[in-house]
Image (spheres, rainbow, N blue to C red):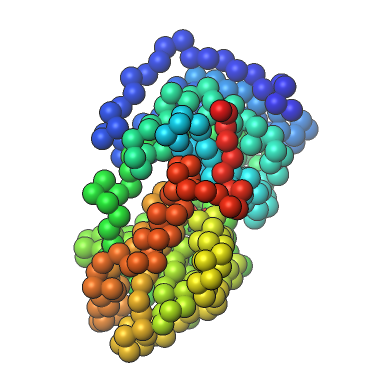
Length: 357
Ligand SMILES: *Cc1c(COP(=O)(O)O)cnc(C)c1O
């Protein structure tokens, strides 16, 4: 199917930002990938074109009913100038899971990986090489049919855009302060929490705003029924080291199945570190803090990879974790995962996929 991928190169090249200006998701490369869907034709007309605005009918369903999904992954430039993707097949597998939940037709995952490799190759000069930098990849799908009836769209567009991003930790990996959210919830059983879809993020903004006003960088989400069991932190999965054992909330249908989460669990098992996926209540966590067995806490996701938690605020209780410092295990996981991603640490799991040599 790659054979019919049409490529139109841009005639002018944008000026690339300085490495220290990058930040996250502010700059976009010279090209993008687009493919269309229509009920009668299926997914068709895959093409790489100059990065450009898109034109949509104001009645396009995505604007009204949020039938849309996205993904997020990164390409890394190694010191010997190879280009690596981290477990990209997992992202396209998850895209199809999200599609299924949002009644969007599935896409051939192998074709998407080929198309992504081609796009990254076309814009390879945009992959920064400074330590901690990478090319963030955002695949997404929008429903484009111009019709206000509430029903799955008959037309979609799939796109991939690319953004060079800076080091998440300009001054080194450092812990963040987190507010445990007791009122708002992110997702409910039977809802869309396990899909990467826009509505989940829109619903989270209010709590994020409140936490931010109080000086916390993220929200710790509790379950949507009892507001008792820990689910995620911001848009990351979450891990706690309690009395020598690592605990992460079990995937229950309202938690997103993070690829970093899955990689951390695999890595810990490989090292022989005890790790368990189970329900974890916030009062159990608080008790472990009180009796001194809460040793480390961290979030996991593609953007930051590992984000250590230095403090949790729950109800009236302030819990300082590991004196607000990055824990030993958190650091080891961070160094190993980012090392595998950058090609400086051996990859015994076959996680990295080379774009071209
Ligand atoms: C994307 C995302 C994650 C992390 O997934 P990764 O595959 O590790 O990047 C976790 N939680 C939510 C809500 C997310 O959107």
